[in-house]
Length: 121
Image (cartoon, rainbow, N blue to C red; front, side, top):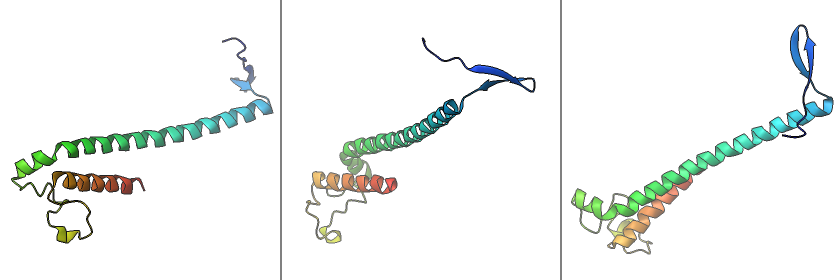
């Protein structure tokens, strides 16, 4: 690296040290603050990436599971999970047909998304 500054070395009390001008010291402190801020942002982004990966994995499981979960649990096609009731009386304003697999899957996905969104808050 051309132009890389070499530190001025001094000896204080028998120990080697590096001497900085006030401007160099202030620049060093500012750089440390910037790196600290970037480190925090990277940590937050990594956490968000893990949450997003978990959400995608849960969605993949959910999308692949409705037919399998009914068969394994011996349930009728109208009920795919406890969170997706077959009777419309529990959700009178539901605009999705509770008897359809697609409606059940949509409700389960919406519930999963709400749960993940609530965890983020």
